[in-house]
Image (cartoon, rainbow, N blue to C red):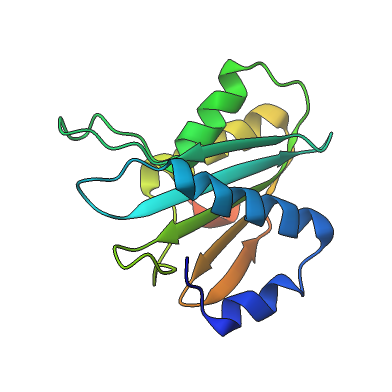
Length: 151
């Protein structure tokens, strides 16, 4: 995959944990199934105990039966009953030219699911995403969805 120099240079500025989860998200893109949109997304969770959970977008001809990478990773985490809290969620998008996508921001449904898991663990986790050759880090899912549904 081709990435901008800006992106590559920024990897060196990240902490070891941030690099680890971002590289896992990049690896998760390889398992994306996106024959309809040609927009591949990989996501990875880094848990406090050091474990990684990966997810990738999975499309289906019976739209909207597919699932975004973020929810794939979070639902895998939930289904596995992982006891360790989430520290980071990293998201990477690859466009139809096999290059870093200009935008890679979670959809509304993913943001709500991200909030749900943050609320369940009663502790925020950082969200790392890449777009326009840059790496952005949000301090919590809450900062991405200011008017979330709450339980």
